[in-house]
Image 1: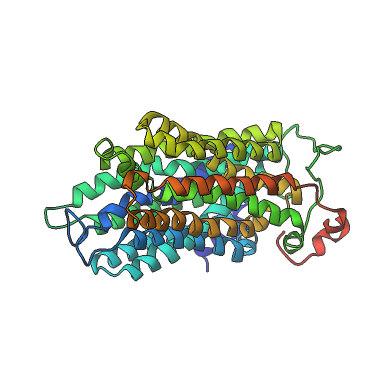
Image 2 (image 1 turned 120 degrees about the vertical axis):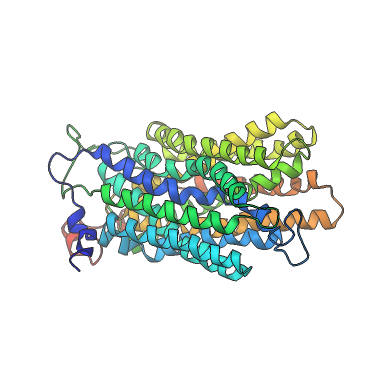
Length: 459
């Protein structure tokens, strides 16, 4: 109890003189680790040849089965964030980040064992379930904390928090490819050893973030900051209780907005490495594909900060309108770029798409803050992340199984993703409509100021 008490919320409150600019590095320590999920596709092809070594053997795992590792992890991410959102707020960021490190690092170690004994269900349990819990806890805690430190720039603050999650693959993809090559032999694919190294390194790095993070003292505001007396349109100064938010149409419309935006991008991310090699055979090698995943990571990361910061000026609703209109055009053009053999435009198109994909994640917490206030934004955000869970299954399943259906129908590998791209474009139209329907939350859902402290929930 004595040692672990340092993880309590009361021990996480900043003392006078603490700079709020110390909190973004703490958030990055977490998100640069758990964002490794975006680079997981680099393991898919090596894990499909664990027995055959140079090519898949009859008993090797299929890509369609391996795709479920990522989908399970993202699904559990959203589920754990929704269920444990209040626990995160009540216990504070330090306890949450510490727990996240144990689950995420431990998930890698269990997955390494699953690879060693060639039992896919153990990998599902390790990286998918336990790692997914670590993802969910680690994802929402820095976001909620930074919004409290930056009431003057909520979009920028969430961009900073989530930027690391999008940029992590830039480090993880080439690092994973290199580690596999180091541990591989002519008779062994070094995936298990790579998992062990990554699990230990990520757990230690995340512990550093847990040690650095702080909460603002009650009533703290940035120096010189004066809360607006006349709020902007679609920006409330009042709060909505966490479970009351579920009763509003705004929550579910934003849920659809996030789900459609994420589904369209996450399917590509889950198979980015394999997709680029199959659409441009002979021109894109495994190493080049790893570089492509890393490049997507850069735009994913940069888009999170750029678009979220931009939303502070043009508004969250207008920002999402840009995502859906421009995304629709680019997804519709990707099959043309591939068919024409234009690798440059293919890469550029997906880089812009991934910037808006990342921007959607970084902008949505500020969207929730605008709609429902600051007090319960962390817990509400945790519940909204279930949209990511659905998208984490829907997106990769669309890519993997439609690809397989196309191949079974005799479609060349280079064209097997075309139908999926058109479906993704259609999903963005649904998101556009949902975003257009969002308006201010009705006053009947707002909490009365005198009852705020009496509500059973987080403080």
